[in-house]
View 1 (spheres, rainbow, N blue to C red):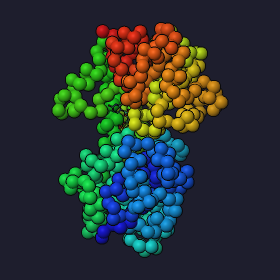
View 2 (cartoon, helix red, strand yellow; view 1 turned 180 degrees about the vertical axis):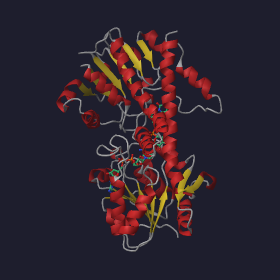
View 3 (cartoon, rainbow, N blue to C red; view 1 turned 90 degrees about the vertical axis):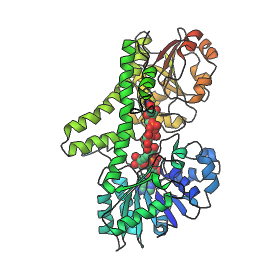
View 4 (cartoon, rainbow, N blue to C red; view 1 turned 180 degrees about the horizontal axis):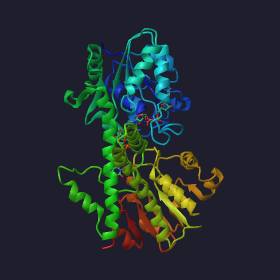
Length: 467
Ligand code: NAD
Ligand code: UDX
C-alpha cells in the first residue's frame, strides 16, 4: 500500500509543523490538517505568515511553499478522515483536572473522541497513527473502540511519538535523531502497516534512523525520553543550589561533567526551572502509571523531578524578595521573557508564570516584555492560576512592546527566558534608567557577571555562588 492521502487531527504545535514537513518532503502525498478550533485553522490559512498560530524558525517558509499545493488546513474533520489512507492523531493529552487520577493521569477524552469519530466516518481500511504522547497501552483502547464501533472496516494502530522540541521543531523534524514506529509486530498486517509508515519517512530520513518496535515499547519510550531529559535539568538545578551555597559556579560544573562522554554536554543548563507542555505532564503521567501498578518507589523517584522543579521556581522569586530588602510591595520588577524557552511563542508551564504569581502575591508591580508572546496570552496564563481577578492582574502586571520601556524605573530585572536579543541590549542605558541599587536576576545564566557589575548592577545568576 502506498499512501496518497494523510489526515492529521489536531493543528497544534506538533500537528502543524510535523505535517508541514511531511508535505514538503512527500510532494506526492496530499496532507490535510484538521482541527475543531476554527480560529486556529483560520490562522494557519492566514495570508500574512506572521499570523500563523505557531511560531517556529523556518516554519513559515515551508508553509508558504506547500500550503494550497499538498498541505491543507481545514475544520472539515469528517471529510478529511474519509479521504485519508493514514490518520495521525495529534490532539492534546493534558493532565486530568477532575476525577480519578486528577492532577496526574493523562486526560484521554480527546483521543477517545477522535477514535470514535474515525470509526463513525471511515468507509475504507485505515492506518491510525498515535502522534500524541500517550500512556503505555493506549493503542489497545483505541483499537477496541475502532473495532467495536466501526462498520467492518480494518484498522491498524501505530505509535509514532514525536520528539521535536519547540524552538527547533523544523530542524528536529528535518534531521531527527531517530524516528520511532511501534506497531503490532505479531501479525503480517501489523508489520505491513509499520512498513507503510517507514516508507513515508524514508523520503528524507536515513533508514538506519528509523526504529521499529512493539507498540508498547514505542509508547513507553516517549514518556521515558521526556522523563530522562527533565531529570537532567532537575539534577543540574539541584546542583545550582549547592553551588550558590558553596561558592562554586554551576556553569563550570556543567562543563566539567559534560565533557565526560558517558554524561554528555546537553541538557545541563541550570535555569529558573523547566517549562513547556510536555515534561511535567508526561512525568506526572509516568508517576501515575507506576502508582497504578503499585510501584511506589518508582513513582516517588520520578515525582522528585517535579518537586525539584517547583522548588527552583519558588527559590528564584524568594531570592528576589529577600534581595530587595525582604519586600517587593509596590516595587516594579521587569521580566525579560515569558515563553518557556527561546524561539517559541508557547508559554505552557513557563517558569515565568509561577515566578510572576509569587511576586504578585507579594504586591509587586511586574512589567513584562517578550519578543513573541501576545499580551492576551500572558493574562490568560495568570488567570488560569486563579490567584487574583483579571482586573487585579491587569492593575499589577503590565505588558510592554518595547523592552526599554518595560525596564524603566524598575527596582530589579529578572531574566526568565534565554532570548538571544537580551544579550545585545544597551545595558548601560538600561542601568541609568533604573532605581538604585539596580538589581539583575539572571534566571538563565546568559549575562556576563563582570560586565554587568562593571556597569553597576547588583547581579545574581542562578547557580553562581559568591567567591
Ligand atoms: P496543542 O494543544 O497545541 O494542539 C492540539 C490540537 O488538537 C488543538 O488545536 C485542539 O483544538 C485539537 N483537538 C483536540 N481535540 C480535537 C478533536 N476531537 N478533533 C479535532 N481537533 C482536536 O497540542 P500539541 O502541543 O500539538 O501536542 C499534541 C500532542 O503531542 C500531545 O499529546 C503532546 O504531549 C504531544 N507532544 C507535544 C510536543 C510539543 O513540543 N508541544 C512534542 C512532542 C509531543
Ligand atoms: C521537550 C523534549 O525535549 C522533546 O523531545 C519532546 O518532544 C517535547 O518536550 P520542549 O519542551 O519543546 O521539548 O523543549 P526542551 O528543549 O526540552 O526544553 C524544556 C524546558 O527545559 C524548557 O523550559 C527549557 O528552558 C528547559 N531546559 C532545557 C533547561 O532549563 N535546561 C536545559 O539544559 C535544557
